[in-house]
Image (cartoon, rainbow, N blue to C red; front, side, top):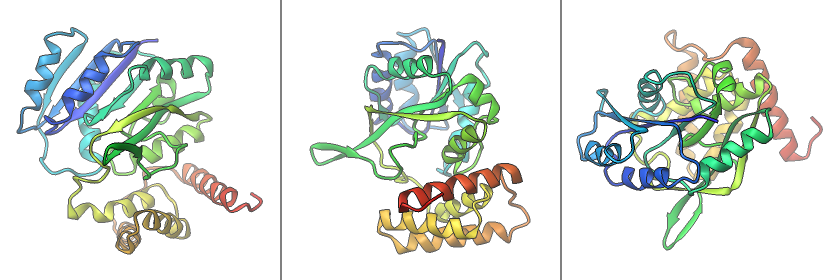
Length: 286
């Protein structure tokens, strides 16, 4: 199975060397890797070039965008700069971040998952962050959810869901749309990825309303948005997060410039799927 990898990178000189070292050490190597150096002002490019000189299947692509770390849009715009430079001769396409360290059998095990079950459309492992001398699970998502920094897509699934949306919430919406089209999403709990930068560490103050905006764009509806915001706020122990998310939803709903990312049919499916999950967790009949 030909595996292509695209890695957006912005000022990652402290991490990308570790990431690429883990990539070139895979027991199953990817066929092609494109690293998109997105307007970096540090030595990110120099580190990338040290790998491109040694490995012909790794390519550097320079891209100039904003320096601002805008959740969703910046990283996906960079991803597409890389993806659009590739041919279509792939079976699996991976979107990896530059601040992770993969276990050396990551791609081999992901490929095995896809080969064994042709209903799997998206697959990945689990993220762990450093706390003291230990690596602990990064509790920002369910262990059944494949996180954005290390996602692998079957080609047919990637095409059916229309690729990745250039907006915050893309890495939730892709899994929802995959299920809408009949695909399953699979996490391998034995694959522990080291996440070197905690999620959201670089987000700007202006991005605080974007999670609520994403829920509106996914047609969650207000009741489901309230529950989703409350759950995340409790996990983060932040009442401010709850109010910002709800405010972001209402701002988006009242804006004529913001439109949903999904159709009404897809939105109905998403709401039903989410409510079914909530009822299951509460032990209620679905």
